[in-house]
Image (tube, helix red, strand yellow):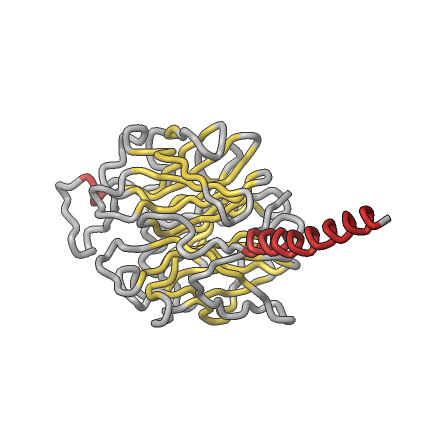
Amino acid sequence: MKINQLLLAVTLVSFACSSPQKEENTEIVEKKPSGNPIFDGWYADPEGVVFGEEYWVYPTFSAAFEEQMHFDAFSSKDLVTWEKHERILDSSAVKWAKQAMWAPAAIEKDGKYYLFFAANDPLTPERPGYDPNNDINHFGGIGVAVADSPGGPFRDYLSKPLLSDFHNGAQPIDQFVFKDTDGTHYFFYGGWSHCNIGKLNTDFTGFEPWEDGELFHEITPEGYVEGPFMFLRNGVYYLMWSEGGWTNDSYKVAYAMADKATGPYRRIGTILEADTTIATGAGHNSVIQKPGSDEWYMVYHRRPIPNEGRDHRVTCIDMMEFNEDGTIKPIKMTFEGVAANPIK
């Protein structure tokens, strides 16, 4: 009997000593946040998207224009651990891209993955720096590449820009494709403070005209500069964009709300701005929704403090929350990032 009591006592002491430690370690693992930035390197203009049971981020490789000639992608199963997919597309596959590939946007359709992007720096004759003898100035715009998987490799889909002409004063850059509930793929784009909307055709080789015969309608909201992004929540369409200057601390994110994808849009205000205790130049954002939930995240780039160069931008993620009336609460930038949140 004494031996049994002694064994029981030893077992209880062992359990008391080991259990809290094991529980504490589990708790530490569960609470580990993503951190900001979410991956190493200079990256900007990130588009976040969900493919299957993985989160993906497609950013601009932030460098001088002549060096900004490829795209990397990053995938994660939980928003915390990110895998780098190098050179999913580069200028060797896009023969018409001579300078600066940026602002990618990805979408899946019929088992194929399409990557839209801007390349070169098309200008109009009245713009400063225009050179009629420089192909980069008068040829370029928005291209599209295709792949069999979200990590590529991607190949040039058309061997030419999908859109190179100027409509309604909008430079053909900073595109985003939004699939509406009826299956329509709306195409938002535009720099130089003009935002256009068009409708992609079924095979993504061009655009369907509107009822008036025009390919694009201007929907520029007040304050718009560039970087449009759209999402749908509870029947409300949210259009987001960047204001200020992308090369400095004035960059910020604003948004509007509407009852349909085509607008009209009512500007609500800014929700992401510089915070001198965290970072400056926060902008060119996208939004990720965890499938089947009302959990939302803003993915964006910002400039570390101190910022040492025009292209020193990093990709970050923070929670995005809503008020009862559907408006968006101001985004609080953090160094911690977000907690792990697997889709599965």
